[in-house]
Image (tube, rainbow, N blue to C red; front, side, top):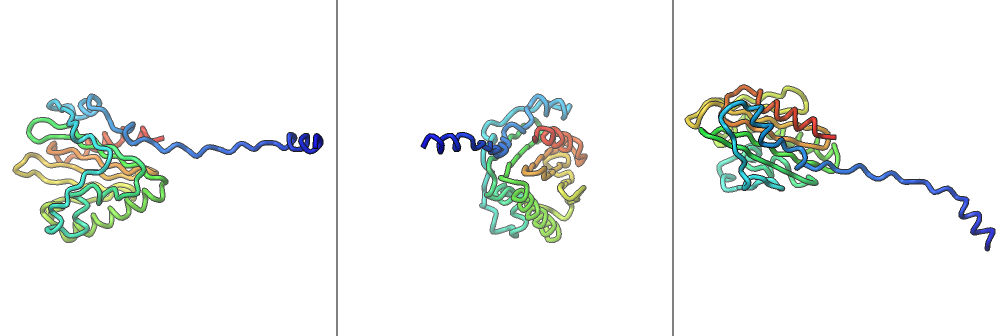
Length: 200
């Protein structure tokens, strides 16, 4: 028995690597002060009611929208249901201006890619057959690269144009909107770049 125990004690213990930690979406949200410095305009304020940990949902307009166009009215259509954690924030100011951020982290890059690809397909279909409540014929949809969607909305009675960017970064899907500043994507692109740098 002693010899058997001695043999067992001599067997090396192989350490198993811990699985990588899933990033926290809330850690990627750009704080108000930093967004304000990017905007360089009228003061913005936070909206605590829009600091969400799951996508907002309002399907009251579904009857008037095609299935693809619903992606641009409901966040649950954008981000799906396979995310591991989610965070969003919106900072707003006078004259309808505002900056919106939504970040969804998925279990792995493949899951995030499938969600983004579904969004990209919906965007193309909705833009081809637009709905004024979602994507209008006057809105511009471009794909700067295979991991980015850029939508530019022209001026309306509510104010100057707006920009929305949807971007895939590994296992993270990001939405950034800059409302009623202009159709220049600078603000949204800069906020997106800051979020992207936070992804480890």
